[in-house]
Length: 498
Image (tube, rainbow, N blue to C red; front, side):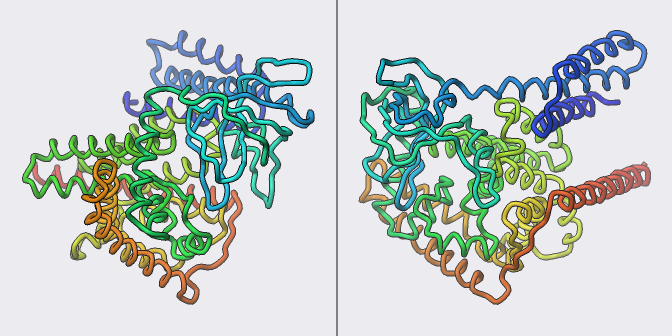
């Protein structure tokens, strides 16, 4: 057994441990049993049987996965105040506000609770829903007066688990809010979020709606200004991923930069590193939030796979990246749809793309249409079961819609970034880029609405988890056989050459 495979199995064992403990509670005695049994197995067979030693360490890493879930389950003392009547919470705005059309949501890191008899320290996070104005910024210290409640599920949506992935176990609606202090957050985060806010303000000044909202979704993953009607058109046409800021989107940015650097006749290795730097700059510009950072890592992995020439070589890097992200926040494995879709879409680009490349080997490239079609089919097939489980809608027009729209997305994002970036420094000078971005955005919105309006553009189809699991098992079996045949063909070619 190679070191590469052992590393892969250890990462998978950790992920499986997190998965099992997230579904069922494993008694501590069983957890310690796994850990001790793994240590004994590794010690006894250290120099005798490498496979048994590897299995023993897999058991240890599985136990570590279980332990990581247990260690992340502290809700803090704030949740104990849910349903205890009216009170005041003093806390810090932990993230930029989530601004929608008519309201905003604030994630508050609680510091103390004020009662009629005095003040006491508390810990934990609170979600506040309030009016769109006044605006609040990251690092503001607020006094929030109202009644804390436990989050409630609605319409078959597990809202409690959705908030739990962000360590939020208390909510409050329409409270009284008083600003106690400002600028109390991390200076680095304040600088990053401030840069993002200035970028958004520049875009809002240069573009009307719905183009400004579409560009904010495209370049920043923000959905605050996208109307319900346009959101439905995205869903019906199968183009919602465009405004999700996933690893797929960032891989498009990276591929575009690779092409630009190729025109400059730069070395392949230099093009790769410049594209990575472009992704890092993009991540910083968008505020370097956890979701954007995860998407950037996924995008870099796709870029690495293309740089290496064989997608299969990046298997360990992808699984390790997923395991590292899950270690930082174990709740994202089951309760963060964005992470699941981003991870699977990236996996599709790494493992399914070579399949379609072989099938379409004789097809003409046609200005990048072939690559867009392969990327779309690879990502869509990888995430299809999740889309049907979570959203219950299958877009039949998606491949054609993506083929048409994604051809222009890189230029749209480029002009959008230039408009916002230049607009931060010189608004008048950014108007030419804003105008160019407006042309592309307007055309893309018209195309999305056209495809969404076609008869049978999408159909309702809901899958349960058993069907989704069967789908992925069949897909894994197919890929195993495909790459096994590929390996045999390579060996035959090498033998023939010798």
